Image 1 (cartoon, rainbow, N blue to C red):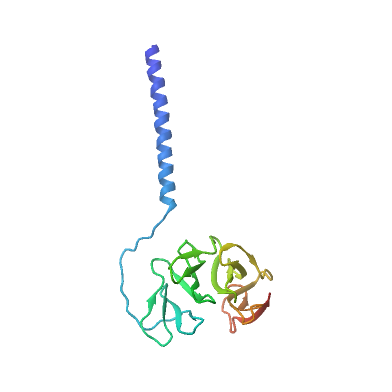
Image 2: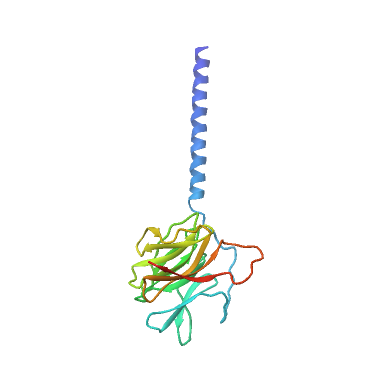
Length: 221
């Protein structure tokens, strides 16, 4: 009888250990599968084009080169024309490039981290650093301060507001907070970077809206 009880105890302990081990392995597999979710393309499509629409572009400080987005990638080419050079590529959607004042970097918006965030890319090394690290908010546009040390960013959930970040990153500061219904897009730092120009409207969406949708405003820092 004692032997039977002893065997039952061993069986119960072994079962609990195996069950706990299975649960641990299942949890580890789930965490591992959620850690990185690479989206692998199912097929490739080659497209050769010399036209585009809904493109954003900027001119280099020396006036010799333009940088532009097309179909989710960023390119540069001589301002006089010629062959475009691809700067970014891959599954991420990259857009709205702007040259730094020294022409050595570009700031742009990319969803490579999962949501739209602001990135800086060094044009010599091709290294990119992520400036904003938003998951719930979206960033849509960015421009440089004239000294090249700061970025003016349009960021928010529905009604985007003006924010300022250092080029090395950080939490940033909100420049405009109210009214909450104000939506701000496409900030442009003026020649005197005391002023920031931007397009704004009331609320992010309006059914059957009539023109004009946006007005131009100026922010005095």
